[in-house]
Image 1 (spheres, rainbow, N blue to C red):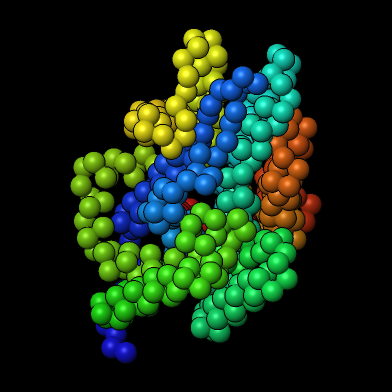
Image 2: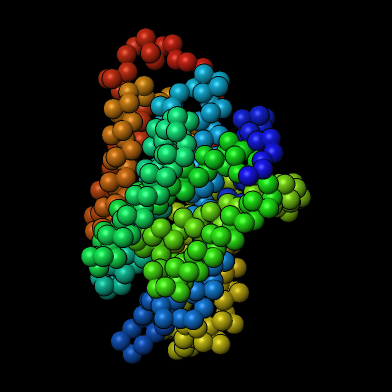
Length: 436
C-alpha cells in the first residue's frame, strides 16, 4: 500500500477551518433531520404529535444524506486528540482537558434543561393535559443521548488516546470487535436492550478513528486507496441491508446503535479526507466562513435548543389549527411537503436566534480545573447519570430538577476541592486553552 508523507495536525498553528466547517454542517444536518421528523395533526380528540417518518418511504434516502452522527464522532476524536496534544505540548494536562470538556458540554445543558423543566411546570399548571406534557418531555429528551455519550467519550479520550499511541491498531480492533460482538448477541437473543451497550463501543470506535485522522495516517494513504476503502465500506453496508442484518434506514440503526454505523463512519471519513483540501478552501470563502464562525462557538447551544424550538412550533401549530379550524396537512402528503421549506427555515432561524442570545454561556471562561483524577471521574459519571436519567425516566418537572442538580454537581466536581492541595493551586502548570 503506497503512502505519502503524513500530514500531522500537530504542525498546524491555527484551527482547521475545513474540519470546523464540516462539524458545523453536521450540526445543521441534525437540526434539519429532526425537523423533518416532526408530525402534527389535530383530530376530534385533540392534537396528535407523532414521528412523521414512521412508516414513510422518504426517511431511508434522507437518512443516507443526513445521518451525520458517525462523522461527528470521528471529528470529535480528531478535534479532541489534536487539542489534547497541543495542550500537552504547551504544558497542559489530560485532567485539564477533561475538566474543560465537562465545562463546555454541561454548562449549556444546565440552562436548557432548567428552562424546559420550568416550561413543563407552567404547562401543567395552566391545564395542559398531562399526557401531552409527557409526550413533549419524552420528545425533548430523545436527542439528549448524544450529550451523555459524547460527554463519556470525551472524558475517556485521554485514556484511549494513550492506548492509541501505544498500540493504535490493537486498540481500535478490540473496540470494533466488541461492537460487532454486541450486535451478534443482540441478534442471537432477540433482546434489543443488549444493543444499548454499543452506546459505548460504537461511538468510542468512531472517536478512535478520528485519532488516525488527526495523526495524518488517513490523509497519507493514496487517493486510490482511500477511494477503495470508502467504496468497500459502502458495499459492505449495502450487503448487510440485502442480507437483513441491518436496516437500510440509517436512523433506525442508531437506537440502539449498531456496528453498521462504523461502516458509515469509515465511508464518510474517506470522503472527507479526499475532499479535505477543497473543503478547507471552501471554508475560507465569505459565506461558509461566516456560517462556521457563527456555529462553532455555539454548537452545543444549537444542539440543545433545536428540539425545544421544534416542540414550541409543534404546539403553536396545534393551537393555531384548533382556534382557526384550519386543518394541518397530513404528514408525508403533498400539502405537507409544500410547507416543509417554510417549516425548516423557521426552525433554523429561531434556533439561530436563541443561539445568538445565549452565546455567552458557551463562551464563559473555563474555570481552574481540579487536579484530582477521582473528582474528574466522579464529575463525568454524575453528568452522564443525569442525562441517562432523563432518557430512561423521561423529562418531567421533577426529573429535570434532579438532572439540573446533578449537572451542577458535575461542574462543581470538575473544579478544585479538598483533594487539591494548596501548593498545587498556587503553582499550576502552564495551561493552554483547550479548543475543539
